[in-house]
Image 1 (tube, rainbow, N blue to C red):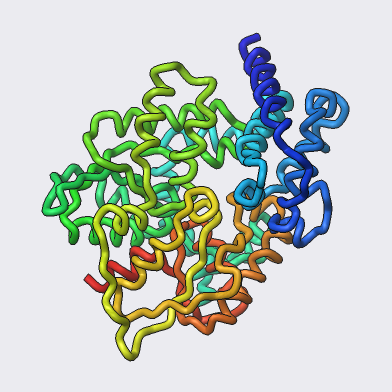
Image 2: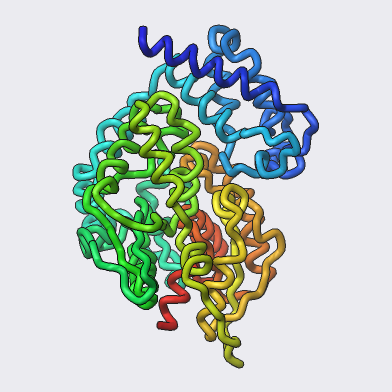
Length: 429
């Protein structure tokens, strides 16, 4: 009965938000999926039209509703371009939650989210074991990028080039940190996120090196969990709220001026989505979310806005680096200039802008698996723009984008390195 009441409450919230859409079609011009399919149902306006009769559609054709709702990257391009301020991401996430509450969670997702993701210790241990045996099922694909491919996993993952699990995760290398503020007078909490922890620990080490260089204290507690966006994107509010609570608990004991993350998706989720989707949580939890989300910053924005950086002139033999603007960084958080300033701190690199730097790369989390063909077409456009820049390196502040772009560059046989801006800055220290 409580589940049904929650479902009805969400339907009411959804109805209140839908009325602000004017059907102007401005979302159509920027939707990366519509750009590939030309289908009205794939654009935000079409999905909102569907959702206006959601209760009826759920009874009539729940699978059809699900198919339409999941054909979305959750990139936020529509919301960023909406003159009416329609919060499309909030609407679509709530709709997916309603749909999953009505239809139930598929067994495989229930196992992944409730059996593994919400149990950080078990999740970490299993991936630690997997990292030791992954070489048996994969072979190197591109030495410059560091990607691999796997014929065995092709039926599940498709013909993609993978970035493998790191031999040693960040949390294994550095289980926890609690260092005092140095010359900066500032102390931050550090949330690496799953992909940095398990696939790109080099990014986490780079962040810690930069923070140490500037005399910033770091609080990095043990037991950090996923930010929750994979579960919420699949409509699993139960797992999502459990992950939020786990993270609130581990950071509750620390005193810090800001919480920084090197992952655009984690930053956007914790700063924007946590408060927006806190309606089902207790008053004390909602207050804790508001307090924490107010302190959350992208790590590039933190070092530029809070520490003040003065880039040197690039060297005569500087390597050309182009910049991809992750959707969740630029469109959701308005962070675009700061990663470029961070890159400019290394005089051995010079920035060469690519066409459409803020165009979506096509990842969208699980979208790249469930809609592999569309994802690859969008990703190919991003690869082509990177290639047009003539750069030897492409940098971005999102490890999910790093996975997608590494895959696309590797599949095309390109010798272009993929890095996080913090890595490039740390290399100069």
